[in-house]
Image (cartoon, rainbow, N blue to C red; front, side, top):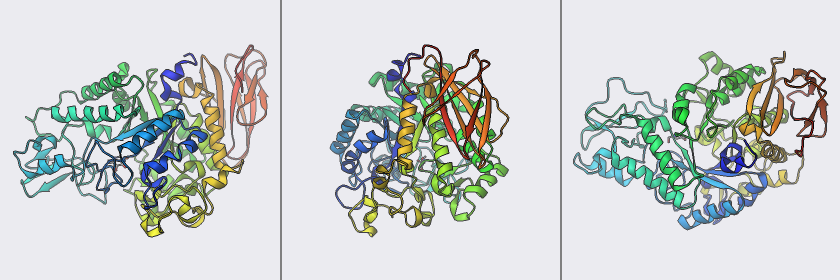
Length: 557
Ligand code: NOJ
């Protein structure tokens, strides 16, 4: 890899920031965030170092699943603005070096979408076959994704006396991708947003979208649903050479590999690493780096253009579904012990800072990890200032509260009266009075400044996104020591999961003379002996990033 390759495969060294326009900044004072507000915060995102903005659904919607129930794929929810405002945001972002990707939610529509209204109106409707209908549900239906909120995945519709498939809420009927008209329409939706300047999509619920098991035989089965994904990727690349598909695929590693497109790498460009994320929390709970180390070590090696997306929280519950029951219970006990903190029996509806009891050492260590693990980091808005949640919302909404800009009323999110806000602002210890952007911008010791610094260093360390990952042997279970090396050089990162300071003894291969390791996050350095041995001291929950300085090294540090 040459350093100039980072501009082609931009996503391998990107900093992705996810936000919901509805809760980011309300510019017209009606209580709901809007595109105009977002356009006034593009400079904030640029200052933070964000290079790719992921916009959660902003389309017209009855809003019963935070916009993941779409009633028009070609528009903007009028509460947030209109297409003109959207284009202004994309253009302004682009000027500041930020690409925009948008949520592509095509597993299902809202039941209020005109296609579904037509589909359910009559068996003879031209739209009937756009959805998945059956006289009887299959003998062994899939379990619902939302236990406790839904009882099944097939809903009886009295008018035409058939059942329709809904892998998520009953008001989100699944589209039928075995229908070529649906497949064409999905491509058309993508083409539309690409034409308006987006650089790709975060693809919602990919395995459900491509799954055609529920479709009754005789309804033109898709022989190979993956071929459809690949055709969408090919279409994407024809329309825009730099666009990506970042897929939500919470499955085993081998299955994830298939969704990348196997050796051809012509499926999804990126996928979230759910397994790594879940094991990170197990490691934090145990103060033992081994679960995370093993999750990282077991990642399959990807073809060069594909990439893992690392995240520590998102807009959903912190799912722990890939852990064993005993492991999940450990994480629940450590970070979400109360029933009101848990959801679906598998996840926690809290943000990171409160889960770590506001301990700045642990919070900082986790973000240091996020930006130094092999892959591309994804931030969820508000993480950069350590926002908390509102458990009184009682569901995934707990973490979808308004962005906290200032200590003023409504955290500076909106000038509307509090009852009119799209979501209540967090109260208590994590309220805007204590946690807000304005204050942290002026405090060089703040979390916001640390995140800026981590981003700066991450962006100057292409090895993180591109390099070969190696776990470094050392005897302390509380320590994660890893290196990434490539044509650009080698860097290492050490993280201490324990409350005890540590001295980490490492041996770096390929070294036969004393070699300097320059600290990247602070002043200082360490020096190996002529066998590559070095001892690195770490504070409680400490972390260090170091770059190996080989003879003739020309990089800046
Ligand atoms: C995954 C999204 O992340 C989640 O928020 C949503 O409820 C489901 N897909 C259904 O669209």
